[in-house]
Length: 381
Image (cartoon, rainbow, N blue to C red; front, side, top):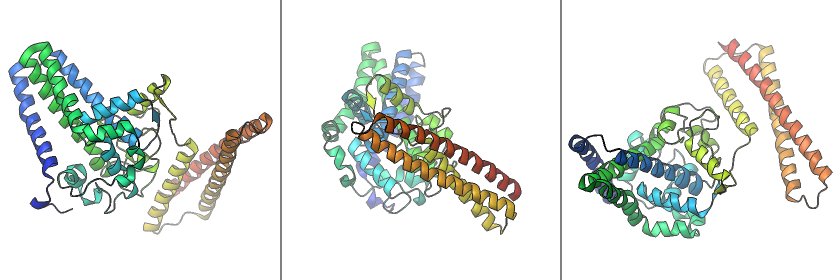
């Protein structure tokens, strides 16, 4: 990226600079002048933080960019309205850049390539961006009337929903003091927080954290970042399984976006929630752990005892064979269900039983691999 004066994207630079200055000056001034006591202003700011933040994570990211679930028009309209108020571009432009990021992660065509440095992936790519989003990545979204409507009007929508409405609500509640609180606290201050917490996914989550599923990109899992970004911090999982509606795959992972999608599905507003089978996730972890063990041993020229190596290889082969068998049966079962009118109920039931047995065999093989892997690690230590 060419960080020169002539390469500055002036509209983006001026907006980010002005809102940051307004937040840094306006919020402390408002607190010193009017105090902390207006619960309506702070409640509105909290609501706006959640509404705009979730509209990015649930709407812009998991719904529009990855199609990890389907949604009825109220959900789509709500996330498009409050997503515009987050001022991270339109949903169509955001999705175009994000899909390009996944396709070319850590390469020159990656819009926020983490290998170009923390500043670049955090905000530099926005301030010095010299190319428009590639809309060839979002031809499906161009056919969506609501998304296309937001694309044409998102600046106006963002200004009204993000700044004018909270200022008006504040004025209605407490005159000029309320209007200033609505603008500075629920408007500008909230906006800057949402901006930089979102930007941390592109910067911090490609710099610090763990890589339990894959090291094919710089994406990392960060539980701390997940707390700030409605669950988006489990980024290594996301880059490995990008179409899963979950980012925090474990039940104890903090992922409010996942919980909201699931809750909305219970009342019929979302559906077709896509999730990677547990067996595939386990296999990915196993392969990556084995690769890391092999790399460590190779780097230190260490050889495991033959008996341990044979046991580990046998368990690994058994795991891969069980997974292949499970995948074949899963595909056969899916085909049978798609043509279930022509298939007998007995045949479908037979496949269901065989499929369940294959899943159990996979789990047993995975457990055996884990025991062998732990034994190998003990010998390695």
